[in-house]
Amino acid sequence: MDRYRQLLDFSSSAQLLLLTLFTALQAVTWSSHAAESPSPRELLVGFRAAPDPAVSSFQPLLTDSSGNYSLGFLRVNQNQLSLSVLHVPSSVPLWSANTTRLARWADPTQLFFNGSLVLSDARTGVFWSTSTTGDRVWLSNTSNLLIQKRDGVNILWQSFDFPSDTLVENQNFTNTMALVSSNGLYSMMLGPDYIGLYAKFSGSGRGPGQMYLKHRALEAKAEIVEGQPIYMVLKSDGYLGMFQNGSVPVDVQSFNTFQQNVSGIRRVRIEPDGNLKGYYWTGSSWILDYQAISDPCELPSSCGSYGLCKPGKGCSCLENNRTAPDSGGCAPAGNQLSGDFCGAYDSRVRVVRRSGVELPFKELMGYKKMSSMEQCEGACEGNCTCWGVVYSNSSGFCYMLDYPIQTVVEAGDETKVGYFKVREGVRKKRVETWVGMGLGLLFGAILVLGGVVGLRWYKLRSRGVKRYLEEEGVSGVGPYKDLGGASFRSIELCEK
Ligand SMILES: *[C@@H]1O[C@H](CO)[C@@H](O)[C@H](O)[C@H]1NC(C)=O
Ligand SMILES: *[C@@H]1O[C@H](CO)[C@@H](O)[C@H](O)[C@H]1NC(C)=O
Ligand SMILES: *[C@@H]1O[C@H](CO)[C@@H](O)[C@H](O)[C@H]1NC(C)=O
Ligand SMILES: *[C@@H]1O[C@H](CO)[C@@H](O)[C@H](O)[C@H]1NC(C)=O
Ligand SMILES: *[C@@H]1O[C@H](CO)[C@@H](O)[C@H](O)[C@H]1NC(C)=O
Ligand SMILES: *[C@@H]1O[C@H](CO)[C@@H](O)[C@H](O)[C@H]1NC(C)=O
Ligand SMILES: *[C@@H]1O[C@H](CO)[C@@H](O)[C@H](O)[C@H]1NC(C)=O
Ligand SMILES: *[C@@H]1O[C@H](CO)[C@@H](O)[C@H](O)[C@H]1NC(C)=O
Ligand SMILES: *[C@@H]1O[C@H](CO)[C@@H](O)[C@H](O)[C@H]1NC(C)=O
Ligand SMILES: *[C@@H]1O[C@H](CO)[C@@H](O)[C@H](O)[C@H]1NC(C)=O
Image 1: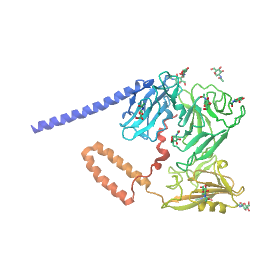
Image 2: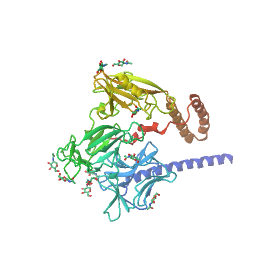
Image 3: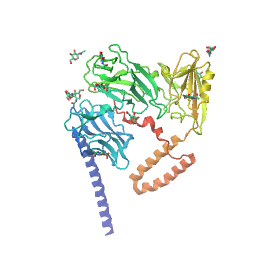
Image 4: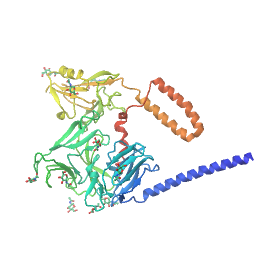
């Protein structure tokens, strides 16, 4: 009898397992089925969608009439999502909702349309909303996401008014907008008669940051009328035009394919390295045909923090003569962070001097005239917001850096001298914290898979990890900023 019951138990649990497997498989089949069936052409009031756990990269919710563009949930950082418009054939995101923070790819997160398109989470509230009272949402065949009343006359809201890092053909870029790179470091904005690229190395606050490229309108064909704003448009003819009035551009930045017929669409994007690049679509790949900065050493941080860029020869480090910075980069731990030396930090400051260096965009940086390197250094030494100076003996210009040292450029002239502060002994344990967390996550996964046996094992092992962490004096998790740039990189899908 007992034996029979055991058998029964076994067979019923096997059945349960099979049933579970079957359900799981069916869910996968259904979801891939759902992905194949076309997503709708418009969303009406009452629309509601949640991220599907079975979708690994992109969950379409709305498509344009050509099928080339799609609005949907794009997976970022594995378990988070952004609401994005994708160029479907290449999976390149052209627009993303600027949410207060990233929503989780999990149940309480939902997108709904009640007149406003709203991304929210029942627990934490609204991440993003268009704050409109429209009747329908649709995607134009130029990738513009629009909210309109049923009559379709007025545009209540359009994604073209809130660009992310990309402009597409004929999209109007005005002086109230900014293009921001996906890592949040670089931005493009229009001035009264120029376009400017800015780097935000000093963290949040204090405006757009340091300008590293300024392209003034040439006004060859039309003059700028003072006091009236300019705007910029990527023209199908293969150029970035600045306009003020009518169709005559006040400036033309032509691409390699200027006035050539290219079959596909064009786009420009501010890249995570700070460059502004233009591409066109051949039908199977994106071809680069414009870049605002062609010399890599002129990029704001081509070799990373505390890097040294040698024109034509690539990267090395400021501090020693390694030919290429290793994967960890040149900066000692704690120096990639923004901030200064003013707080009650438990850090010591070391100094690195290097001759024959200059700043990549010094003509856009403020300077003070000083009579000697000693005076220039002295001005920085006692100033806790100063990270370093570069002094030119021939001109007497003293350039002061108020953000963590980025890449400097090798100069032939040995009388150009740099003085750089290095923060030492700052939270070196961070790496171990992440290792510890990684181990924790791994054990967590094993726990779920392995059931009770796994649980016991986990308990034993995690005690070991805990002791290890205690020995290393690790406490808590590093600040959010440490995730910084790299964490959003996964949004960069394949481009080739
Ligand atoms: C996508 O756009 C191209 C033009 O860039 C067009 O030729 C093609 O037909 C479009 N694809 C679809 C599925 O409509
Ligand atoms: C739509 O939902 C948002 C978020 O819940 C809310 O703030 C807004 O008032 C709603 N709009 C309408 C028209 O109900
Ligand atoms: C896009 O739509 C417009 C009408 O709204 C049409 O004239 C044009 O041919 C379409 N372009 C493509 C590529 O489908
Ligand atoms: C997103 O919003 C923040 C805060 O409002 C703003 O600083 C940032 O520039 C915006 N990003 C883009 C791409 O517009
Ligand atoms: C672009 O924006 C400018 C300034 O807001 C405006 O004068 C112009 O008419 C717009 N152009 C288009 C094509 O929308
Ligand atoms: C527009 O341009 C024309 C000629 O280029 C000029 O005469 C006119 O004053 C301009 N209008 C405005 C509003 O700037
Ligand atoms: C571009 O295409 C137009 C028509 O679509 C044609 O008239 C023109 O000759 C083409 N130009 C070049 C440079 O191929
Ligand atoms: C690195 O090279 C510079 C000159 O190129 C030299 O002055 C310096 O001593 C070298 N440093 C090391 C650590 O080799
Ligand atoms: C720096 O310039 C001063 C005068 O301009 C000159 O006397 C001095 O020799 C220069 N020093 C170096 C290291 O070139
Ligand atoms: C300290 O350095 C910052 C730049 O890092 C500069 O703006 C400020 O004027 C300096 N303060 C003094 C007292 O020199």
